[in-house]
Image (cartoon, rainbow, N blue to C red; front, side):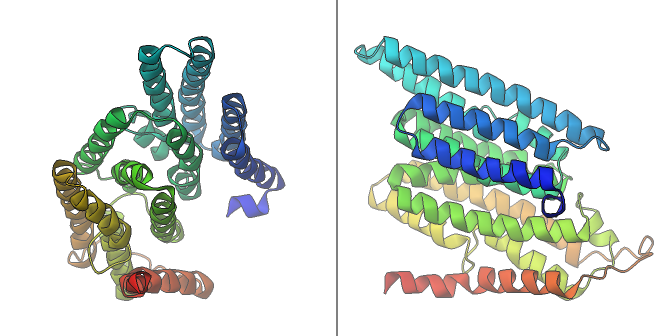
Amino acid sequence: MMILLNSNKMFFFFILIFSTMISISSNSWMGCWIGLEINLLSFIPLINNSNNLLMSEASLKYFLIQSIASINFLFSILLKLILLKNFEINILISILMNSSMMTKMGSAPFHFWFPNIIEGMSWLNCFILMTWQKITPMILLSYYFNKNFLMLIMMLNTIIGAIGGINQISLRKLMSFSSINNLGWMMSSILISENLWILYFSMYSFLISIMCIMFYILNMYFINQLFIYNMNFFMKFMIFMNFLSLGGLPPFLGFFPKWMIINFMIMNKIYIIAFIFMMMSLITLFFYIRIIYSCILFNYMKLKWFKINIKNNFFFIILFNSFISIMGMIFSTLYFM
């Protein structure tokens, strides 16, 4: 909400959007690199807040990590230009370029910075980092990838994203590990087709936006706040539904793109990856259900000093989004008509 009130932040926000357009519409690798650099320099002022030391620290960490990834990307571009005809070197260059893109979007095994930086951000910045900041690296990855390397990485993403979230009490860290898990699914969708990736990414962004808006309104950062706060049962029920949708449980909207990916894998006899993906989804659902359990069944009266009042327009947005999330699977069957 601060972006709409602050002209400087609004300016950097628009540059952030245009830099992504520069990268994905560029016809040379150098153009892509320039777009990535503009993107980095426009996102840092959005994170930074002189009143909050955690945000300042997050912006500095983000700058350092992204700079290393950019140097790696630039180095691999120059190597590609110099050693164009050598096939063995080309494989190495593709892995180098893929690694730099994976570092940029916080993919495993280059994910260690991602939960730490998200922990020091506001919910709006978390939303931008988990969604918009993944568009450029993902599309650049689809231009030039090493298939075997990418298949290994997407399995690693789903496993680390699922196991890393089990022991978390911070909602921001939990959402970041969920994002790493979903990144594995996104990579598999981009290997299948770009249209499927657009579908998966748009649905994932929609579901994450609901969660971030809810937590922003309720000013929640930790799991225990869900049962300490005196919340309306209907609000709790909507959080419950959206978490299940984000976890990919049928018949919710979040299951639809996952269903399409699993269907493709089974048709192409890629059973091992499909099995790993499904098992890891069960683990993510486990830690979502654990939050829901603490939210709905625990009733901790000791600290309930105040009641949360949500403004009507926010409540309407959440209600509408939740309705689409819950009814989405029914609507999505029209896709097969």
